[in-house]
Image (cartoon, rainbow, N blue to C red; front, side):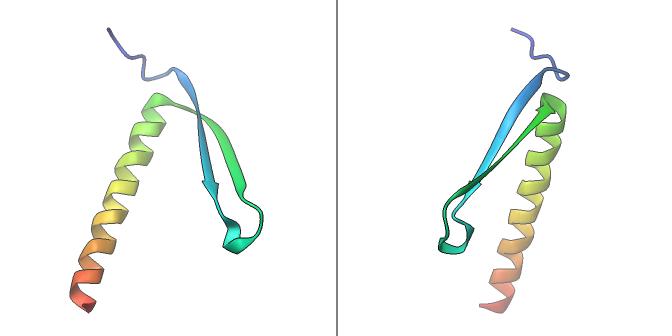
Length: 56
């Protein structure tokens, strides 16, 4: 089964908004953009982990 990198998918992000009512952000993006976004999030998590280890 092939995955079309140009297929449109909907991404929804939810957060608690600092104790206020939860908010949801929704955006249509391509699978390719989703892959790039996930790589950026993974890089950010790695940087955060490294920073936490240095400051601990």
